[in-house]
Length: 101
Image (cartoon, rainbow, N blue to C red; front, side, top):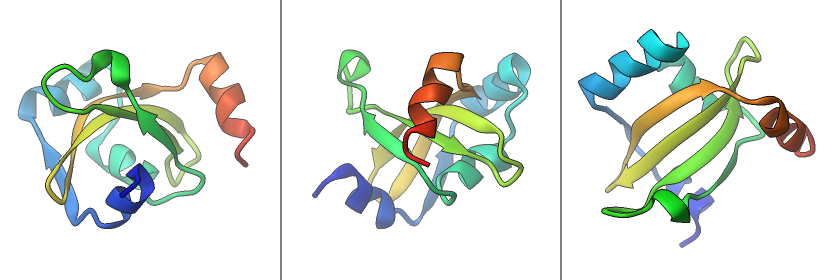
């Protein structure tokens, strides 16, 4: 099953309190914004092989309902998307993302 199929079967999100707080304190990204990015199109996602040590990690480029473009790092735990990190996309990431629109 590919990553997009697995994301399509996800039933919700799982949040680690430390990561949730870190995303807000460091990048002013809310939980709602992170979750919105998974429902808006396009969502560009891939495996993050370089950082997949203990479990597979993935990254995604997505946008919020307010069109804020986010870079998201997550893992999949069963049918849950476990958020690790979120921040605004860099210029290079925005340019790559815009190719999918």
